[in-house]
Length: 294
Length: 310
Image (cartoon, rainbow over all chains, first blue to last red; front, side):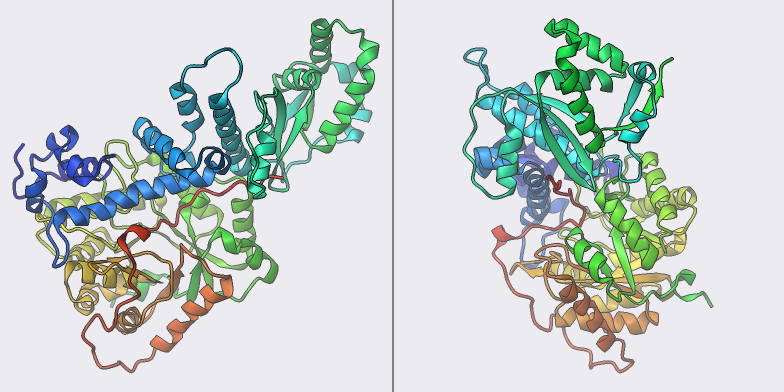
């Protein structure tokens, strides 16, 4: 459609948006198919749509918005993924982030949602592995996953206004009732497994300690929030398995039996571990309620 | 005789609530008339930001200022967003809810920028209809801010001041007169900012905004990163006289100094509430500092918080 005196409002909005979000700049945006399908005007004719000012061409004026669009979104992603930025440097991060923004343009009313698909985007666009061993790309993807979890836990639902279960709650139950209970996890509790100790790396970055990339080492983490601060704790494999089963709403008995079947250990051998785990989980406020399944 | 400020109270001199000031505010509880929050920074928060807001709302009066209403967009209104906005407004007993005369995106995208509209009859009808719908949903009259802008459209058939004035009258909404935005746009688009203010229906001005900006040499950018310059203060004096006074708020969104510095800046407004007019001076009286083009982008007060991790 050739440009006329007054295009429909939706047409001019789609045109302007196509122009200012184009990754190669305003002139390329004006010539893009998306913009041309709305308003058929070339870069050297754009003053038919956008007024020149006394000191700026129409393209220069549009560039104010184009630069602001990209700079703002990149600033948000840099802020959310500081450890990833440290690992690969800002230049490479911006390159990845620009690709992400093209694949997942912002649609939400909140900037908090901007980075939600970034870890998944990195996983999908990663280079092929040389072998089965975790590599540099896995480390970066792990970092991104962890930092996104931190964001979600930090400002998501928490337990600051909820009373978590205490040792007294547990001691008030018979052993039988206890074993057949299901525990209600704190809404902020998240479990995750990584191929690298990315939590230590991320903490070092936040403390400005300039960490070097770590060696691969499988890590199970429990990530939660207390007093509005995100807390993360490394878990042993058996502890992680039991905790995962409880979060999946298995009874305590089912969770422990499942572990024993996996390890082949007699129950007596894990009694002390189980006591210690439940003590730690109670102190850490991982659970906010007990529901009897009987 | 219509009620001034549409009947909304004059809250005095307020400050935009920013997360970097949370510790200071909680520790010292300074004597501030009121706070303006960025709605989107709190409407989904279930963590520290919302907890701090709830504490502050017990002591201070709160006004909500949004950046994602997108009243001018041709996409459908986001009803989920509006429901969340209303819920937050009810929860913190917001004095009023404001946003901008702009669009933020179309075709499902949100640019997270305050994009300008062409000003003509078609866009006026569109915006007026949407304001009416939003006011029905929110069950209150909303307050809309004149944006700072960097382009104008050849298809516009009226000035921004005429558009804003007609819009507020026809939709029966309030206005947030951002004096710095008037100044920034007046330089960028070569109009008289005093004439702009004279065209604004005085009784609809519920609130003023003040802020710093950056002179790029060829244009001004509304950076909210410094002190208010003298020409903007003079414009504020004019706006104060024109309207009879309204709640006044300072925005500071980049290179944010310690809270007392920000608060002291808005308190300067008292000096400009005098009934004695300075002789009308040609503008700009003197430019704000000049920056290189690469160093500056348009700021955005909505932010993603950096998670606090043990």
